[in-house]
Length: 326
Image (cartoon, rainbow, N blue to C red; front, side, top):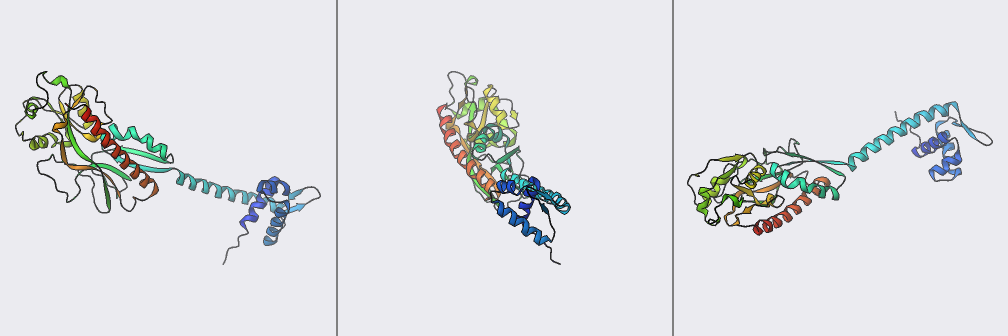
């Protein structure tokens, strides 16, 4: 059995005229002529086979059937308006879940996000930090920034390895390189004797080295690369993340190996960078997303923005670290 529905346009005219109890006021509200309102109402009454208005000499009034119908139509239009508002709100305010490495988040991304929000005020960003592998298929995040090696990538075996696993499942993953992972020794000159500038790699054997738990092979790999296989003569100092190790170096506790990419937004006042002893690790920083989701407008917007910012950041970090080389 087919369902009968009167003209939606005629219902709009009826709702306005019934609420205002005036064809003239309804015409003004709807930006049409009074005659157009009158014709639509008459057409609706003919469709329904029911009189909705009593037309008096100088006014109109709703019939009993018209009053009941107006209540129901008003409620129906209210539901349509609510549904429309909810749909628009969902479209206008998009949410983007981003998982990032703790040091990248604290020393780089959080200081930049206001720029993204200026360009895209309708996209709400939700940031979480972790060094663990990300499950993009399980919707843990829309995008992730991780460091490591892609499957099948080959590196010089002397380079510091990265034990971190970037993703749980590489199927359907789009991995876009953001920056190389270049580790630079950073230190306070207070830990050196005046007559021993940090120009001889053997000096590192006598200095306290600050290790970062999340990158166990950073210093061992650095020593392997520079043929300094001997044990350090100083007690081991260790912190959980690079931003902690950087702060420890600032306090003069020792020499920390810090990724070049995060140095540009760090407070390097009073610190020196031994650029002549930097080393590229066996991995890079990547922006990870699901290939099938990557071109969604809000995800594509962040991908374009963050790649551009990383490129700028890399250029600035090279300039800033070399300006304070030892």
